[in-house]
Image (cartoon, rainbow, N blue to C red):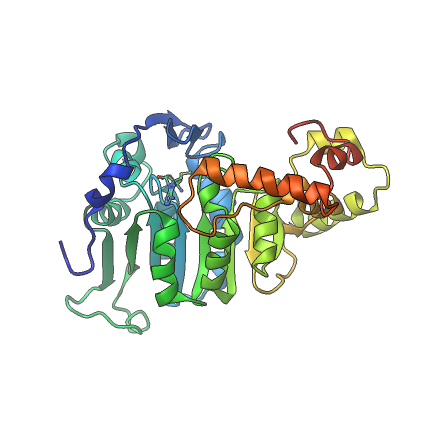
Length: 359
Ligand SMILES: C[S@@+](CC[C@H](N)C(=O)[O-])C[C@H]1O[C@@H](n2cnc3c(N)ncnc32)[C@H](O)[C@@H]1O
């Protein structure tokens, strides 16, 4: 094991859950976690989700070849998102500095043992994932052995897929402070792919979101599949600008038109609301972003959602609470806010916007 490498088995005790192998609608490899009672990816499939939810709004094409891109993945799981990122960075000639926060080494080991997963990736990508799984880090640079310096790309000796990565094994709540010490305000992209807040509230608390917000560089982006009001409120409390990832390809004008329609609507059209998925996730940044087909500002309906009971954020000041305790404390905070008139009920909000229970 090289310098800086970590023993992935050190956290075996926490990784007792078994996983079931699944396939998404796009045919790509995925897992189900009985421990968290949830699949690793949406029904669309792991690859499609990685491309549409994480990669597309990251807009890697805004970085110039040879530039260093710093990415943090909160919950690495099978490594699907990382594999896609590695291949895209190699294609665009970007140097990747990657950090992964993950509790359990088993999903990546399982994926690497499966031909269905392996067949999705280039040999070099698999080699990088294997090194990461075995050693907890990887480093790849210049064609010339022993040379490891910036600027090599301009001289033509920079290897496609250059970069380095390091896994911080363990509970992300405990490893985040370590990362903050080293990379505060420097991260270009944070891909937050934890299990959903109801199943894993530990990673969606104001404390965790506050820490990841501190990691972001000025032009950095935090991206997630999650559209929950409590999470968006947590991001807002971390002083981030929050937009919704487009649910479907609407185009810039289409997205703005959708917001305007919803904002102007004094009597919202319930059937339209129920038919339409609101958003494909959330993007947060320090500064407001220019309009794009990939995201749109929050509608009046979504902004009201943050102000009602559903927007009560998850909290975990000790960074050690379990899911049941965090959910329980949130219910207490919701009841208090209702009594004090600080928040309205989610059912009143649903009624106003003509939404069914569970929306
Ligand atoms: C939805 S899956 C991640 C999916 C992943 N992006 C992929 O492509 O496979 C969630 C992951 O979060 C990890 N996890 C759960 N609780 C965690 C914690 N407290 N800290 C770090 N990782 C955690 C699980 O082990 C699991 O691998």
